[in-house]
Image (cartoon, rainbow, N blue to C red):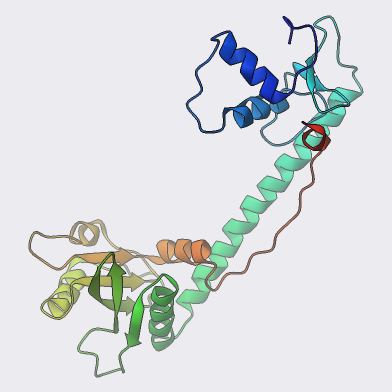
Length: 252
């Protein structure tokens, strides 16, 4: 822009960068990269990833020009931009705090379920994750296995059994993992162990043994992670956060 002595659109700026061999772009859409970097340093455009140091300003025709190096941003503009960034930072902090609180409440709700309800929950969670033919076995007739299903992996189908322990604080040790593996061996190819509490280090180490059925462990926090990932038993609201993008509308 300084060499040309005129404003430039992102596509023009990209062409000038390539022509001068100033940078090599390893991306399928280099113009978008140039546009994003210009906007981060553009006066009047404030969003979470915008930089405090501004080098450009948008023109009325959708292009960008360099700021006169002798120009000083008026004091009344800087506090306004700081207020915008501060407000966004506060909103993000509140969102993170709210999510932590909801995660705690979700885990507490799981711990308050009846054992049979937790078994049904685990079966439906597996279904939400893509498992097929999931069945929760009847109490006292499950042979130590709370349910089973199938997981399709490519052209093959893997038979999976699952075990559920709804505990408040009691940790699951390696003996419980090995016992579940023993009941699974010869009947299923994988085992999934769900608990609302946690697994000891020894239990985690016992997940896999050479030649034995692998057991996948899901503690309370990991279960909550899956619930958030799949929006399973957790609802979300979209909060619109507006930002100024007139320059993108005018860009040619």
